[in-house]
Image 1: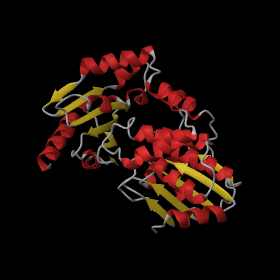
Image 2 (image 1 turned 90 degrees about the vertical axis):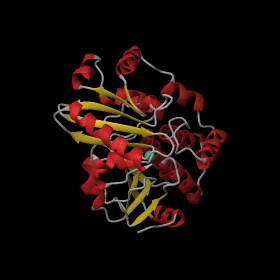
Image 3 (image 1 turned 180 degrees about the horizontal axis):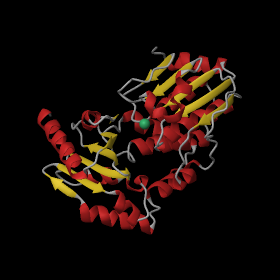
Image 4 (image 1 turned 45 degrees about the horizontal axis):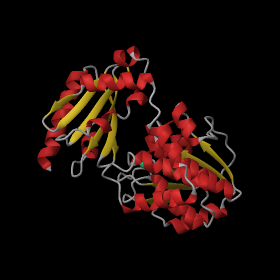
Length: 321
Ligand SMILES: [Mn+2]
């Protein structure tokens, strides 16, 4: 059921015990939105826990500073389950069934697909990040927006807008960023950790990207096999920015990276310039996301063949445009 943030704030006020969930393979918005909500609920004096199975990368732990996330669910007879930044049930990973069976569920999101529904759902596609949704909710909760909350909201914002460069960046992104900075979000620290802390391994991977990128008309892509990952002692997450970086090339409208995470299991990450819808392409491969930033997980046994299929879908999408 669709609900206003006013009604959701009332539900939070009425609850004693709250559990918060977000999507697996958490990005900065998943962490920023769920953790800012966690601390906001704590400020209200609620008994609150946050659950996520995934290991958080050291750089992300450094960003969020404290890590209260629990891996194992404890059934405390919660009054309320809240999910942030999650569009479909499967993205809740191991907590999917637990969440779906919750006695009262709130869904806070900004994706356009709406397969995950709560008893109270607030989903606003006009926001570039779910952290902006949480910012608005914090205002409704009438609690102090302090520097800790501001830093977490800003982390989500900078993540989902790619430092305010993605086409989803809009007046609300800058408005909330302004509020965060005014409230004391430590943007110098956040920018240093997120954008200016490359390791030598990162530089080697960037060299790989620059040496191996391919351009086909207005489409740019890079393939990374498991063997390559192993050679660089890297994991998929180390290459997450490849697709964004490829979109910076003049004349390129759609970019993607295809990374073999485990044998024959591929992670597709796509980016599109303004007017190019990569969400529809990702959906053709079982994934989803936003118009300008989307992805999918694909099982395949031939990376070249899979790449050709993706390039073909990109070309079709350019024709539709
Ligand atoms: Mn998001």
